[in-house]
Amino acid sequence: MRLSGFRVWLLAACLPVCLSGCAGGKAGPSAKGGGSTDSGESTEAAANESDRYSNLTKGFSIVFPADWEMMESYQGTAVTAFGPAADEKSSRPMANVVVEMVPETTTLKQYYDRSLTNLTNLIPRYRTVESAASTLGKLAAMRLVSRYELGGRPVAAVAYFVTGTQKAYVLTFACEAGELEQHREVFDKTAATFRVEQPAPATGAAAAQ
Image (cartoon, rainbow, N blue to C red):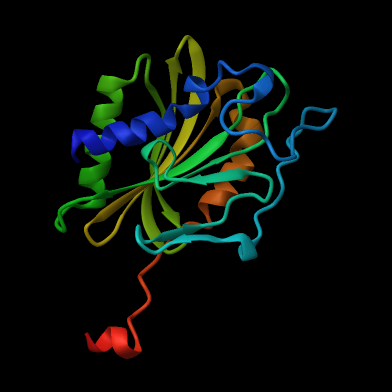
């Protein structure tokens, strides 16, 4: 795994803290609805299959919750989405997908092990909470739950690593550490919608070229 590619993902994973200087829980783009109930429970809207985001150039698709704001090519990611803040003092939870070209012989374990080494070396106060084999639909994946500090603020991240034909995909969710359990269900349901996609075959005149 090239370090330059890893740095893009590292930046993406750090977005909630890097942007949390904005007052009122408005880290990242402005919120569109959502928020929390009086009991503090998340009101993040359920994902809708009709809202599936597809990026055939990068080779994947995913469905974000309806009240999350999505941005393509944000801070070097293929796509990033921001959810509503839990309250006016919180940063917004986020999710992103980073896609990296890798040698065809790169295995999921090789890619994951290199990523984990880089995480430990580059992120201050990094700590692995969970590390296990997983699946995203029918795809073999590695799931990593971690905690670390950035700017003096504790962050929790859940990342899924998947490899395809000459591509590696990292799907990362991050939020303030104390809010992980509040957002975990939404993170898991969103991750389950991830698919590796193949470009549609050329037809007609395009196929004849």
